[in-house]
Length: 503
Ligand code: C2O
Ligand code: CU
Image (cartoon, rainbow, N blue to C red):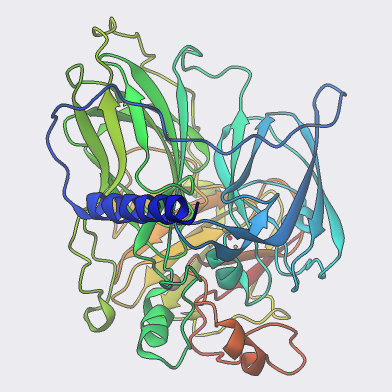
């Protein structure tokens, strides 16, 4: 009995080592494999308990759990409904959504529905914390034109980074009744994330004063293990000639993925706020944390072959804290061809939907947003301060400048925007965005129309402050602030709010 167990554990460990080693190698060109088995498991969809048409009513609980993140020792995590990633919230445009949320964590939390246009009190921002043992009903309606790929994650004041590192994240898919892409195209969801574990399986959350703690403070927390839907290098089968629709979410705290799929034709059809006006053929895709893409991948390889979805080296760092292995390509998913004969070519639409340009002539103000390490316009996050006041129904231009050498992904809550230009170069195609990467020493101009809901909205860099370990969390609590780290200067989640006032 014991030796069977030992043998089994040995097998699991060697599996883990093999998978990790495989993840580190560069992609091979198309070669031969056995008939591929689909191991890319998408999280289950949250069960709708409403029988009323157009109403989605679900229950979501955040609680501590013990889960095997890697084969071997289980990890003490935080999980939504007991799994990582959390279950997928699948909705349709026009749905009325009621999420009964229960916080069974030992600390306050919120659930932020990243990218959705909804009432401010349903946004899950730090202004609406849910106490340990508490409950909150998030109620909102999905507007027309919002079909796309989104995600949800905790957003409590000062603790978002810790809770995401512990495992709290999940996907949102919103569907349109008039989706222009053929329904016959199979859909694949890929939630990308990373983590860093100690040999005993625990999540590595270094002391902020340690060398690694200092690096995390500068870069945001990156992990060396890359996950796709919580799995390490899963296999996705495809048939020659087949077209698949991939929805990819970057749920990592700080890592920017530079995605490539050697040997494949890839059409990008959408990003944060849904479909483009027309498909764009792409070679590689830069996906900053919190950004999403929708791709059409056509199986161009030969039956029995395979290729890899990879992330290529991307230098988002300052030289002092650039990781030594930053220039290594990593494999994410093995795309394996079945031995079936090629499928006939699928006809794809050449236009998807109109995206009317927001009119710069309508802009009532141009705001300058300057990002440096941990600061926006020279200020750290303060929950009681409001930095900009605006009006519902108006259009604004925001000039977002990154004055430092490291990339900063900028996110605005509650409203989608369009990118006008980057460093003065007009954006080649229009798309709806809620997060935009601003590379070091670059400037991005966006245009936004504040349609929707009045309230206090956040904007910030989407690299949360690195989570203090539990041991240091106690001593870094600011008196009176509840949960924010006392190290005020290095916090990256510099948040300012925008208060639309009704005319
Ligand atoms: Cu993805 Cu302020 O959040
Ligand atoms: Cu930043």
